[in-house]
Image 1 (cartoon, protein in one colour):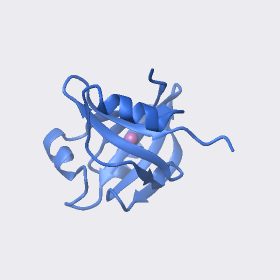
Image 2 (cartoon, protein in one colour):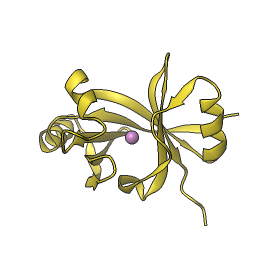
Image 3 (cartoon, protein in one colour):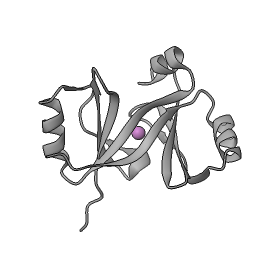
Length: 136
Ligand code: NI
């Protein structure tokens, strides 16, 4: 049994500052200023509107993990991230049921170094799984 809660929608953008400005004009507020993720070579900024959280992701170099995606799809939403209280179980369950991991669980600097992993599914596209905040 999966225990997934939607955490954010990841949105590829070519120019971070221009994107932030444009999303602000749509009524979004910045909830976390831009952080550089040196593992994935992307700038990441979190915005919120109507209790929806949007993650702007912008590659900072040609060998960024999303540079190819941006080239292909331009500015667009490209993954939904799900938070789970039971990361190991849900990760295993998804990979046993048609999801293919495209990286390994790695800390996300823009998300308090919580562990995340990306998976793809033939019918649902790309998803991200993030470990729920430890309640310690
Ligand atoms: Ni994300």
